[in-house]
Length: 258
Image 1 (cartoon, helix red, strand yellow):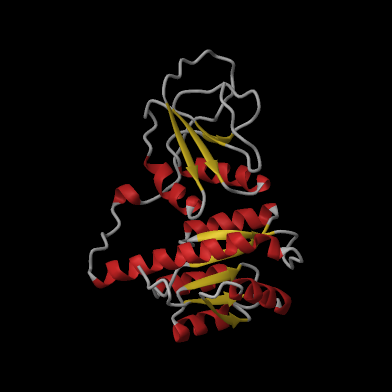
Image 2 (cartoon, rainbow, N blue to C red):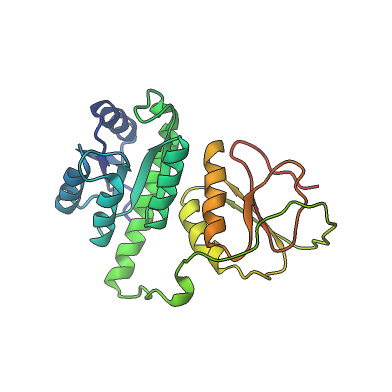
């Protein structure tokens, strides 16, 4: 783990001068943050290679080289973890989940759109996720130096799975076991790695509560469903719980089972 007194070097990649300034102000409000700025994807990749930051925050919609492409260059070079900063739109959600599948550490939604006048509302979330990413990056660097990283095996590779469609029939299914997962920082990436490994006959109902905006959970459930061996959906009021099915709680709501 890094020295707690050592500053966390953060590179903010954002084409909007206003958003760069806002993110810089938010991050520098924590005395452990040292912030550098990049104006587009190509500039971000070049500065990442030059500065070797601990964490990068990356906007998706960048001129020239887009955020996803820039992120892939950075991750290919094993520079540091990347946190995606994206809009709350449906399109923004889908691109965010694509970024997570490509290796992003986590994401922070921009409240209020691409040019967010309310980004400071996400101050605590931004700082906590940057610190978590810095710790994760430090651990990974140690593992690489010690050559203890295991190679990817076929069992860990994610690929689409053909399955039956989800139904919410009123059939009286005798569900005696449940597996519940509550997750926050780093959750989407972790879930995208774990869910495909759950067998189709694992013998329980699966419930997931993820700290996520309301309009993100529908897209997230659909995305996980594409790569899961069991049907997964966003939970709805009145759903009949079925064995070997997964349910994701809607963002902003509690998930109550009766």
